[in-house]
Image (cartoon, rainbow, N blue to C red; front, side, top):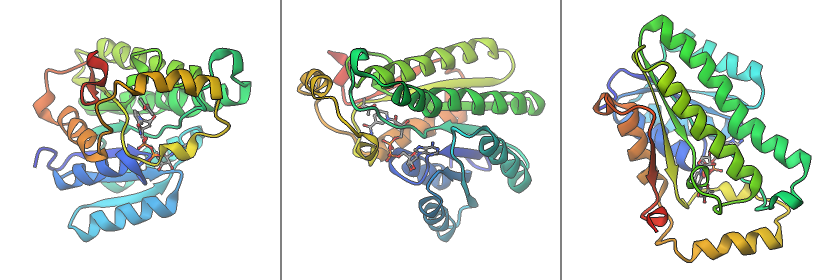
Length: 252
Ligand SMILES: NC(=O)C1=CN([C@@H]2O[C@H](COP(=O)(O)OP(=O)(O)OC[C@H]3O[C@@H](n4cnc5c(N)ncnc54)[C@H](O)[C@@H]3O)[C@@H](O)[C@H]2O)C=CC1
Ligand SMILES: CC(=O)C(C)=O
C-alpha cells in the first residue's frame, strides 16, 4: 500500500494510461478523483474502483476550460479535504503535421489541452500544496517531449513545453516539500489514435521511420507502475526528472 490515505487527482482517467493509473493508485490505497471530459467513462472507472473497496468519485473536467479545472480542485477538497498527488495525464495527439502544414486551430487546441491546462492545474496544485506543506505532481508527458521525431510539430512542441514546466516547478519549490516529475512513455496501447484526425501523409511518413526502432508498444499498466513510484514517498528524493518508460525506444 504505497499510497495509503493519499488523495490523488488523475486527469484523463476514463481511458488508457489515466485509467490504469487511477486503478493502480486505488490498489495502493489512494483515494482517487477520476476526472475526464468523458463523464460516462469516468463514472464507470470510479464505480469499479469503489466496487473493489477504494474511495473514489468521478467528475467531468474539460482540462482546457479553466472553470472546470477550478471546480475539480474545489470538489476534491470538499470530498477528501486535501490533495497529495496531482497526475496530469489528459492529452491529445496531432495529425503528425510538420510546421509547414500545421493549422492555427490544431496548434491552439494541442497547446490548450497538452500544455496550458497542465500549467493551470499545476498552479492550483502548487498553491494548495504550499498551504498544506506538501504535495507532488506527476505529469504524463511523452517521448515526444524529449525527442524531435515522435509526432508532429504541435504535439512535440506542446510536450517539450511540459518538460520545461516540470523541471522549473521542481526547482522553484524544491525546498517547499513539493516534488514535480514527469513520465515519458513511448508508444502505449491506448485509445489516443482516436484524436488523430486529418493525418499529414508527409509527416506520418517521416514519423514512421523512427517506429521501426521501437522494440514494442507498452501496456498502460506499465506506465501506471512508474506513476505509482513517482507519486509515492519511495520517490522522496526524486524531483525534476522525466522518466522514460519506452522499452528502450529512446536508448538508441
Ligand atoms: N498512447 C501513447 O502512445 C502515448 C500517450 N502519451 C500521453 O499519455 C496521456 C494519456 O493518453 P492515452 O492514455 O494514450 O490516451 P487515451 O486517448 O486512451 O486517454 C486520454 C483520455 O484523456 C481524455 N481527454 C482528452 N481531452 C481531454 C480534455 N480536454 N479534458 C479532459 N480529458 C480529456 C480522453 O477523454 C481520454 O479519456 C496523454 O497526455 C498522451 O499525450 C504519451 C506517450 C505515448
Ligand atoms: C503518442 C506518443 O506520445 C508517442 C510517443 O507515441
